Image (cartoon, rainbow, N blue to C red):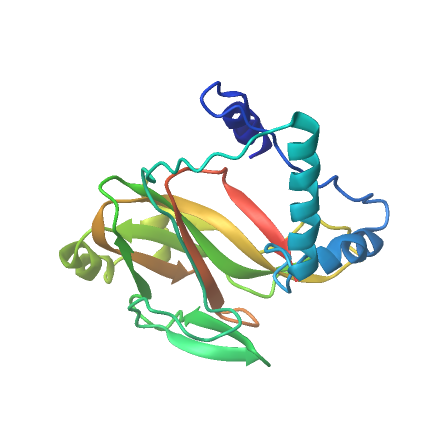
Length: 243
């Protein structure tokens, strides 16, 4: 992501400056989280009011140092993105056959059941070109409390119906499917975490399509989806947000 931003900033047509927050010292993971937590909301992805104030002050500093002058020119967007989260509201505008479950006070997820022949979320890409889909789902570490799942995108109802007869292993063999792991192993073993992971799934064609999820086995908890991101750009295979 940082390389992509640097490339964009260095484009002569943009001539921008990348504003970044220095990463905390990870020798003590808990202290590192606490040192930056006030800048973020509970999802540790979006800035809090304090985070927005920090950003405003950094932007003012940059503008003053570079003696920039205001421009009121606004160019049209080439495309739009879509970020939806039902993690804290339990409300989703997307069609689905999965149950919205409040698995913890004020924490909600669409749960994919192993007993169902199909678990799906309906997607709508309003742009004229394919968009890149990321699925937000729950993970734990170092112990794995959620099942793995296979995700696949279908562009019509006929393909969706046909997928009902396919097993986890059948779908896994397909090159168009994505294997979603739910074990978070990027923190020390002595630090148990319950996180939201954002994994890249694939390209979503213009119009209506369906995301299907097939869990591989019964675990302590069912596979839990908490949001989606549709982006005109691909930003790597995954991003993590610790709660």
